[in-house]
Amino acid sequence: MGLQDEYGLADSFARIDGIAAWGSYIQSRQQLVHAMTQHDITPALDTSRSFARSLPMALLKAREAVMVRFRPSLRAHGLTEQQWRVLRIMSVADRRLRPMELSQLTFISMPSLSRLLKTLEGRLLIKRGRHVADLRGSEFALTPAGQEMVAQIVPHFETIYTEIEEQLGSAESEQLFRILEHVVQSLGLPGEDELGTD
Image 1 (cartoon, rainbow, N blue to C red):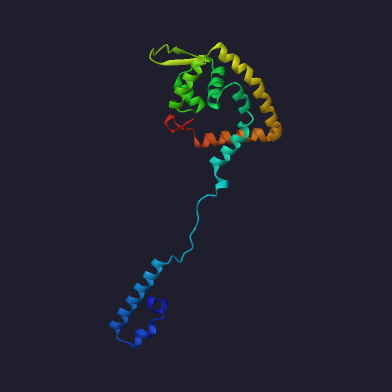
Image 2 (cartoon, rainbow, N blue to C red):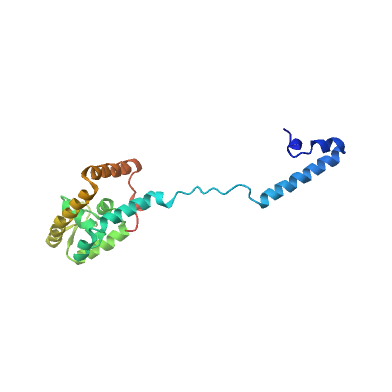
């Protein structure tokens, strides 16, 4: 169907002067285009993902559901979650760790980690040493006081882990670990300059 037929103008074109008819058609088309630009006749489409289906928020909610069980013990020992992360990593390391290694293992940005290490060092929970190959670089390890604190906290946390597994179910817990590991393997880990602020 031609444009004239589309707008019901074909019969009129046959009865009036061709030039005048074409001018009338152009004017009609301009009026139609103007009307369409003034009024959006297409319903707006909301293509954004539902907040309830946000993966970062779902993971954050799950993290909060887990961490709320551990925080009272951490507060009782005067530790933040990030400080505990550092102490726990050091407790299982077979050598002293450099700040960059700690940042990568704990997913704490270097600026935040630097402040955190100073705090733990001030509390005599960790000690600083010099790197053998790079005397300008520092390495960190637990002090006896730091080891004692970890030894006090770990048994209590193991009890909490057992309670969580009982609530989730052993099979579901194992499935959850597999899914999370699959996410990490598929998407990859962030680089040092991509870490969050904690």
